Amino acid sequence: MDTIDRRSLAVLSSGHLCIDLCQGAVPAFLPFLVAERHLTYAAAAGLVLATNIASSVVQPLFGQFADRFSVLWLMPVGLLLGGAGLALTGLVPGYWDLVLALMLCGIGIAAFHPEASRLVNAIAQKRRATSMSIFSVGGSLGFAVGPLLTTAILVSLGLQGSPLLLLPEAALALIIFFNFSRFQPYSGASKTHKQAQSAVQQNAWGAFALLTAVVICRSIVFYGLNTFLPLYWIGILHQTKAEGNIALTCFLAVGIISTLIGGRLADHYGRRIIVLIALIGQVPAVLLFAAFAPLNPLLALILLIPVSFTIFAPFSTMVVMGQEYLPGRVGTASGVTLGLALTVGGIAVPLFGHLADLYGLQMVLFSLAIVPVIGVALAFILPRPPLVVAHREAAG
Image (cartoon, rainbow, N blue to C red):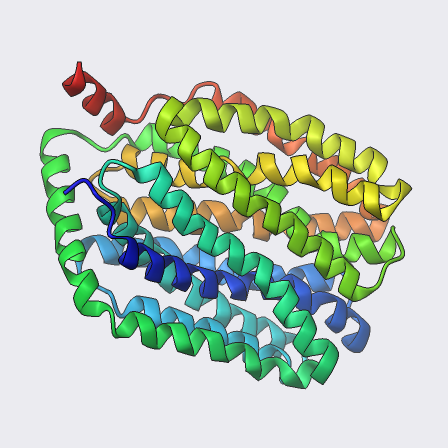
């Protein structure tokens, strides 16, 4: 079967929207927590760290579990845990209570991604990069909607309104549960595909490790901007909290378009070249933003467009490359690229928070421009995924 099951892909992408809404909501909480709980930038960034440590440590384990067993139930459970963590964030009193609430949120995020992305791989057939880009757009929409929804609730009701963020998670958990019978054939097909591939070719662990390092570089820049953009809009551009979160939403909205474009280009022109071009373009884009964004908010928004494009365009392609480097461990590859490697960027955020406390938010932006240079050097030596090589040789 070469066609994509669009309904299944739509449900999984909607679930991805809701689970990444949890991740997008966390930075939107920060200005309110800084104001009401009197947190430092480093302490606020530590809350992002709590979410991402929980997600990054557990997600590869969920990926290995998904490779061995049918674990469809992890997706609705993950949604419920993620929503519960957000609901508690506005209610608990102390800083360490906040840390625990956001770690619960991170575990929910970790539970959802490997099984969902493994199913997308089975549904996609030959159009992996395109299908993964659609799935990734669901996540990008979640990141974009998260700040808007969270800000609207917290401005209207205060931190006590946070339990409302559990409602969309619970709704999608039910939808996914009632679609289990539809997903089941793909769950079995994915495992059959995995066994057939691993019988004829080995997993390219060295190439996968190299790709993981590239994903980490991209992740550090993404999480740095995702965390500090609202605070930058407030502290440097002297805008309101709402305007700061709108800027974050614009950053993520542009990412939705670039994710779709990147996936389609990767299916037509190759995975590696798209990743390489995006990383090369990221360096001047971030430098220009750091240098000229302080002049006025409108110019800052304009300069944010190429930054967002170069960050988001290669993401779904890198996830697909990871799955193709490890055709016998699709769940594990997804758990690492969507979990461990991706959220290492969130783990690095407190370092930039400390830098912001010492030297200001402007220095953070210039520091972030250095990271893609490392990614470019690594991307130059990425080999072509073995699964792609096999397909092209068969076609030839």
